[in-house]
Length: 410
Image (cartoon, rainbow, N blue to C red; front, top):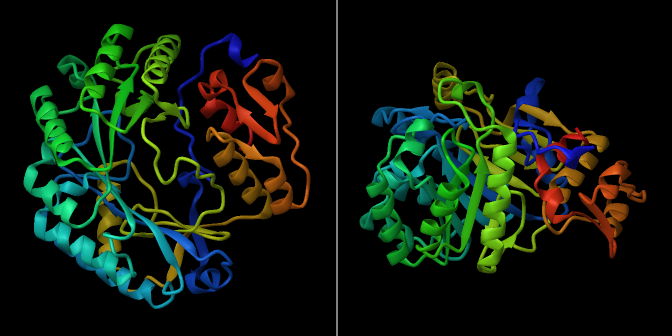
C-alpha cells in the first residue's frame, strides 16, 4: 500500500514522455507537416537560455556553467536564425504565452536581453500583449534589468532562492549569499510585477522542519503571488552533500503545504502554490502546442515532440550547444518522438491527474472515444485518488505521491 509509507523522491515527473526518451529520427521530420494538422491554433512560445555562472548541486537542467560572451552572442544569433525560419510556417499560430527559461536568462546583458525580445517579435510575439514570464537568480537581479523587463511588458518573474539559511545553501553547492537573496527579493518586490514566484527546496541534509518553515515565512514576507516548494531529489550529483531521508522530506512537505494553505494559497500541484489568480490557474493540459527556440527547449506540435539531445554532463552540454550554433536548417526535427495514440493517452492522463483539477472524464471520452477507467482502485481505497462529480482527482494526500502515481501510467 502506497500511503503506508512516505513518498519516494526519486525523480521529478511533470510530463510524458520524459525527455530522456527522445531518440534520433531515422529521417529528419518536416515540422511544417505537423503544424498544418493542428486544429487549435493557440500555442506557447519558449526560449531556452542554457547559461549559468555556476552549476548548483541539485540541478539537472540543460545548462552550461560559465558565461563565455562569444558563445552567448553566437547562440543568440542562432536563435534569431531559428526563429526566422520557423516564422515562415508558424504565422497562423496565436501565441498566448511566452516564457524565457534556462539556465539563468538574466546572465545576458541588457543589450542581449533586448535581442531576445526582438527575436520573439519575429514570431509575432508582442510582449506587451502576450503573457510573458522569465526566470532569474539572486545574483543577476538589479533595478536596471528589472526596469527593462517592466518596459517590455514582462508579467511574471520567478526566482530560485531555495533556502534562507547559508549552511543549507552550502550543502546543495549554491554559491549565493543570504544578503544577495534579500537584496534581489526587495528589488523584485519594489518593481511590482503582477506575478512573482519564489522557489524553495526541502530535504537538505541538516535542514529541519523549523528551518524550512522559517524559509517559507521569510519568503512570504516579500509577498510573492506564487511559491514552488521542491523536494531534493536523489541524484548522483549530490552524493557528497547527501539529502535527508524520504520520511523527513514527507514531514517537511506536509508542514510546508499546511503553512501555505493556512496563508490562503491554493495548491495546484505537488509543488505549486498560488496566492493570486493567474491566467493558467484553471488551465488543464495534455495536448498543448509549444514552440521552442534555443538549445534544450522542447517543442510539442500534435503528435510530434522534438528537442536537441538531452545531457547533464558539462562536456556533453557544451558539445550540443556548439552543434546547435552550427545548425543551418531549423525546419526539420532530428531528435524526438512521434507519439502513438497510447502515448498521447498516457500524456493526457499524467498531465491532468498531477494537476489539481484532475481528469475530466467526459473530455477524456470525447478525445479518445472510450470511457475513462482509473485502473488503480487501491489508490481510491487509500484515499489518494477520488472519483467525484465527473473528475478523477488526486486528494490532498494523493498530491504528496504525485511522482509515484504518475509513474504507474508510464
